[in-house]
Length: 346
Image (tube, rainbow, N blue to C red):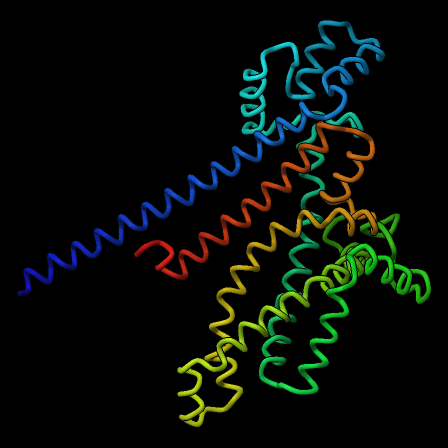
């Protein structure tokens, strides 16, 4: 009997290992396929754009007095492709350049695109991370309170959420900018920090940075928290009448403990998964907010490049935003799979 139990245990562990390996391979394979699709779309967009980035760059170099052969070589390096070679070779050259960190050269800023994106991305990540995290925490607890306190408080929370959920992001940004930056004049309306300050780990710079980021973060926060409040409230209400909640009430447990231990914990897992997805998706919404407050993030960079018809920088920034969404989905899938073994087929 002991031998049979040992055999069954070995088989069970072997099945679990196979399930984990297959799940890992499937997840990584899906990530690679999505990245390849994103890069392919970016390559096709470059060739679908009106005008030819290579010819534009070549003309600019020739007008600057660069010899023709040298200008051709420089234009090929800066744009990442040469239209004189077959399309399929251009595609593989683009893939090679992408995976080696070469995203072309910006005609607007006269610098490599990867350098510009690397300088802009931290500001977008900072604003997105702070605002989305605060909106999630605030919306989660408001949703739980609304589900447990049915009546005037629940109505007030819903009304408050509906109001901010119905205002477009650019309109809300404009309202906050006029209210706090023009009339009350307690917050700056544009930029990252006051002029004359040297960026670094010093109190003056940090305080100025926090003051300048207040309005963008507040705008994101007011746009985002209603969604988390509604989602948490609906999930909590669907759990309220489950058998284990009814049994907990029959045992005489307090409503506060039922809300935190029985309802809140079961609501938290799907909401955390949605939160991880949202970090990537929010990058695509940064154009309006960063442009409105002149924050030099990815959204502002994309807007400026598109306005100047800097095609290589526009597509490269757009590609990075798509990759951020893909990585956010990948992290969410991995996290959910680690938390819930059923996802891994174990």
